[in-house]
Image (cartoon, rainbow, N blue to C red; front, side):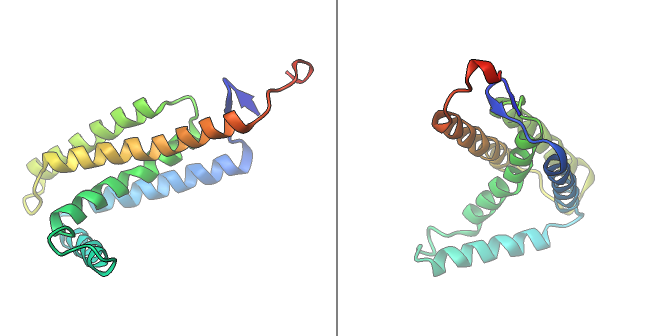
Length: 156
């Protein structure tokens, strides 16, 4: 089904995407609002080690850079799945939502979770992740639309 030049997801595929979005968002909420960040720091260490294994220097593959990349990556699936479920919501909307959610998470971490540290850098990384996820979907739609022949007038 086409609406506003965008392919819409319907039926069981949309239900699966919604389940994936809700499930991922719930797990993300648990990770972001956990009382400590030990598991998250360990995962960033793995990313840093992977970077060194792939050939980056230890000065390049730092823990801080790995944490930034992980913070980008954790929000991208939310905006990508959301863009598929709600196709009329633009990449700009998802970037703004990511910024608001990241700000609220960091505010909560700073005010309510004494073992966590709020960070402006995390807000920037999470917002970038929201942009990346929605941007990938928007670009793939644009490419698909460019490669799809126009619908004949009789079929509209």
